[in-house]
Image 1 (cartoon, rainbow, N blue to C red):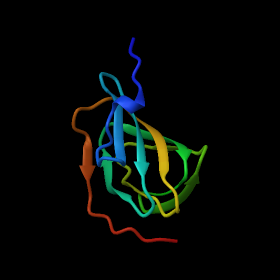
Image 2 (image 1 turned 90 degrees about the vertical axis):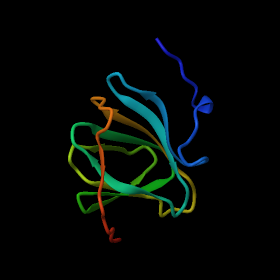
Image 3 (image 1 turned 45 degrees about the vertical axis):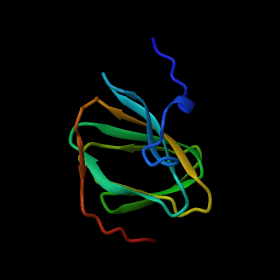
Image 4 (image 1 turned 60 degrees about the horizontal axis):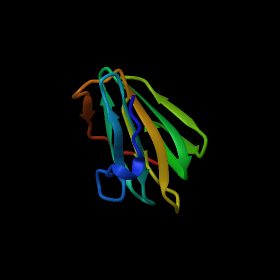
Amino acid sequence: MSIINENNKEYRFGDSGPKYLLKGPRMNFGVVVLKPGQDFNAHYHNIMEENFYILEGELEIHIDGEIFNCKQGDFIHVEPKKVHYLINKGNKNFKAAFMLSPYQEKDKVEVNYKPYSN
């Protein structure tokens, strides 16, 4: 059993980006914060599926070129091999819990994606 407090972990970019609370052995779990105007590079996973549950703010997510506008309380499921790109176009921080499963040490493939907006 483990009990991990979010405040004891660091965001990748200091005060934003992903913050992993658990990495393996069966899944990754964490929270991600994007500040207004901040995005997260387009990528996909060969094996892992990725899920987001929005805790605060709004998110524009592109999944295989299709754009979805999501808000607090929305759950987003991204299948393996689906390219996804996240951007916060709102005026306040976006925060979500995320989960990747089944755990793979190196399963993220970044892609060159030119987003368009609706």
